[in-house]
Length: 176
Image 1: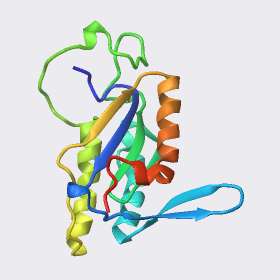
Image 2 (image 1 turned 180 degrees about the horizontal axis):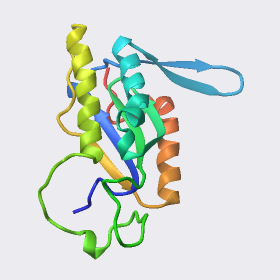
Image 3 (image 1 turned 135 degrees about the vertical axis):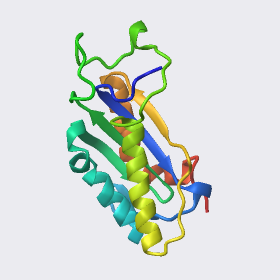
Image 4 (image 1 turned 90 degrees about the vertical axis):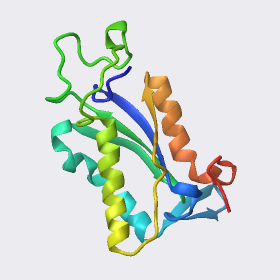
């Protein structure tokens, strides 16, 4: 089992319950040179963006850097890079992203200072905002996370994130 507090880059996808389009609408503007698709965010969509970019300052002790991010009508994709910090310092070689045999351990423990705690806090802040502003809204209970293994994997995921709005009509999370 991978320790998600470890130094590494993590690609996350967080979805809205029942594929509801709470975050905005994809607007496609076409000019003579290229097609550009962008999300026109709703009130809660703006808050989702704002809270995402506040994540490193809220969790300053975790030494987080945010890489690529995109907000879609009913989900978001982002890359969270957890750097070496007081919670993940190891005595052997650091940083190491790929798991070794020593890393495969089955143990239960505190779910703090890791990817799960980042996502839990993030989702909670948006939920509280929605309730306070009478916005009927709900997250899917879970989220998707992928450990980025190397530069090629990172580049592929960055391209996917950057092109996501333009491919919205073909997205598995697309619904009318």
